[in-house]
Length: 149
Image 1 (cartoon, rainbow, N blue to C red):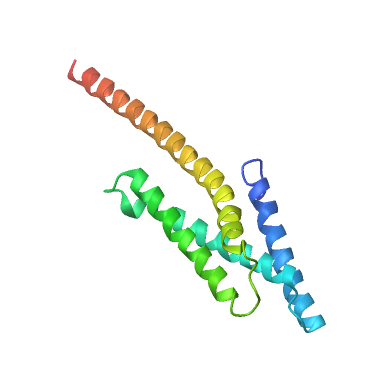
Image 2 (image 1 turned 45 degrees about the vertical axis):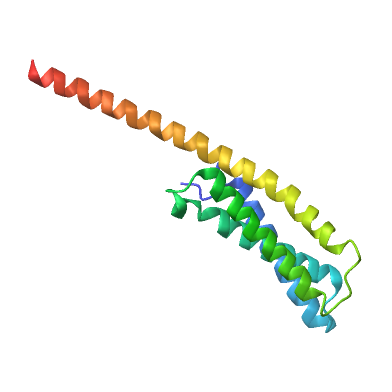
């Protein structure tokens, strides 16, 4: 059995790459004794990616709400987190006059693309599973009908 196959090749590469980049950031900061701007940016992107992935993954907890409400709520929460991180960072470094707008746009565009891909995949997978369930039910009904005869 292969541990890395066609289905998990790209996710495996992404995990390894992420671990290498995070390790590089930590080692550079420890060796140089300073935490450079690009290191902070990469760690911020990683943290926001973690938050976004976690929050999107929790959609199933709100199954009783309309999906559009859940998606908009998730987006509002994550946008709030991005703005909060930007605001907190303003106490440590000056923010450009367009900093909040730039952060909003830098977050919104990739988030919308990622959320669209995620929810499209979710709909596709749900439809596929529903078809399989329907086939199983049809098969069971056929078996039941045959056993009555």
